[in-house]
Length: 231
Image (cartoon, rainbow, N blue to C red; front, side, top):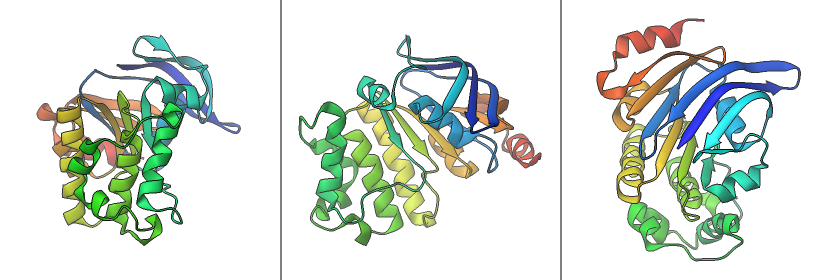
């Protein structure tokens, strides 16, 4: 599904990711974890074409996309939920969802599966996005990315600023998106318990490189924590 090989990415004059390789198999949930500032969000922005990439390869569905524009990558079937969610607070929940259809040229409609996955969304369709709680906004942001029926869903820090009870709901929703809709998922996250709960594969990142990876079911949480704490 997604194969990154020897990727080099920059912010201005800083080479944040010098040489990164990782893969996300079709139908799986992969998590990229690590401390703040190690290059996790830059990796996602590199996949979406939002930062300068000067080397390497990004294959999506066996197609090279490293030179494609952000909207072209979205059209190919990559849905992206950025850190901080970035919903439009003055638009209603329904209007926020309809913006997700723009990936397909504004065509189509919001599928009932969205409301089955996120029942609270249907209850609040006419409410402004800015009046939702942090957890509800996160659910809206994920739902907005799903209305275009992506093949790959990318989530940047989905638990950030959300209370523990709602984190459990989001974990369940992510698992259902993967299992019931068949969507491959890549998540950037720091909350290790969440990672171990929802993912099939994990990658630990430090200084723009992968320092540890494996199957989540075989993960040694103490080893992962030690890798995440190395500065």
